[in-house]
Image 1 (cartoon, rainbow, N blue to C red):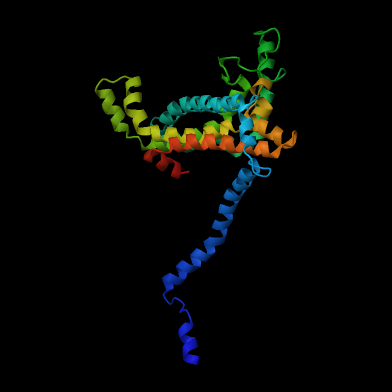
Image 2: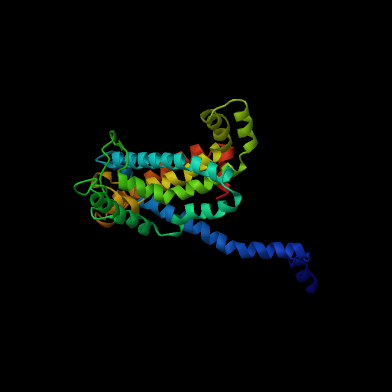
Amino acid sequence: MSGETDRRWIPLPVDRDRRRALADAALAALPALLATALGVVPLLVLLVESVSPPVTLSNYADLGGSVYPAVMFRSLGIGVVVTLVCLAIAYPVTYWLAHRCPARYRLPVLVSFTLPLWLNYVVLNYTWVWILASEGVVNTVLTGLGVVDRPLDLLRTASGVGVGALELPGLSLGLGFVHIYLPYVLLTMYVSMERLDYRQVEAARDLGAGSLRVFLDVVVPETYAGAVAGALIVYARIAGAYATPQILAAPSEQMIAQIITTQFYDVLDYPFAAALSVAFLAVVLVGFGVGALSTDVRAELKRW
């Protein structure tokens, strides 16, 4: 009897490496499950809420009415425009930093460029209120020097430039977005620009290529993956931002996060707010998926 019981026991691993592997797996299981649950469960709750009550698609059908498509289109358009501005700034800055700046200054300069990452978004946005307000720094200087007779409307003023719902962000909204999200693009681009073989640039110049030709034929092909990865990282965050448009945007520049918040807290229409959130998330994920089709871009994204 005793012998049969002994044969049913599952022998414990005696090998030290196997025991260590099992211990590592057990140690990592709980935080991994917790992290997965924190990421997946809220999305499932949001999805279920968007098709209630009890089960209906009417909330999604209502998305096509009123101003919602225009607001979503404007939000995505502003995200694209600000991302392109960030890339236009990041390309020359990171090229200079990686290949022309003396090595001993690179780290302090890079840290100074990324200082906004260390500060709260609300604080950064209110910095621009202090700078651009009627009695702010810019207007005080301009009126003090006699450049203008009265303060300029620099804060919360729409640009009025655009086609249909796709309108360029106003001055204060654009500056706020670039100030906050440019450091992300700079960091991503700097990693790509550091790997650029500068001998190719010198060879192209020796063969008579001008700066524009060198940029298009050498720099862009070698660094496009970093540029696309940086764009994917920031454009959805810009399009879905809440604090910056709430503080710096004109009333006509409402973005999708403000509309969703209004549906949640003022209208108390939770199913419709959830449907808006899911629809916006789906649009963002489609754009992210298209951008991540490239193997080089996925490699850049893994570094984040």
